Length: 277
Image (cartoon, rainbow, N blue to C red):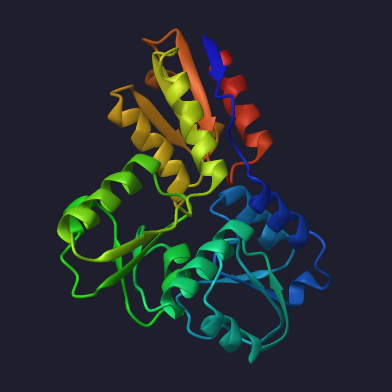
């Protein structure tokens, strides 16, 4: 089997920085990670092996520990203040591009805009963005757009939103609110764009695709969705162990891409297993 890798794929700088910081934390056994540091099961196993405790970000206040790690997906300033009251030290691994979304949304709110967040309402990144907002709505698809009773509408995006989806939603907002003053700040991150574009380029060269990434990773699911939209057979896996020969017995050329939380070593193992078929 011939395996073709996407030109751009895998771990982004925000995830690499988060992992690097996590690996330098002293007294890991006295440290609590508030949520999944990144959506990657291998990283979560490493965190456990280091002695750190991971708790769900749905907990309003985690159990007291000497240090708390805020994940790469970020939290609201309101939540950060709550965490600070329950620990001696906070390690903040929030991706700078996620932090930018918070800042842009807050700036628009300060100027009097009603905020429309394009993204998934239950995703931890979106929860962090809206945590400091007073008047907002979250829109996941064009059909959810309404006529809003506000003269000023400010729009930001979850960093891993599909650019084509964001474009469609923004247009729908304009169509539904023709008299409103609309300010759109494109906060889709460059790593997301480059990985999605690489998949688009690769789909013309392969018979099937393998997308590698955590089951809870939004940007990984977006890569898989692109394959489905182009009607290219696709399998999403977290590691090489989830692959089977039965999935690929009728294909000679398979493409591989990976989400931004995927380790280089995991990608390599997936490619090696495919090449052995």
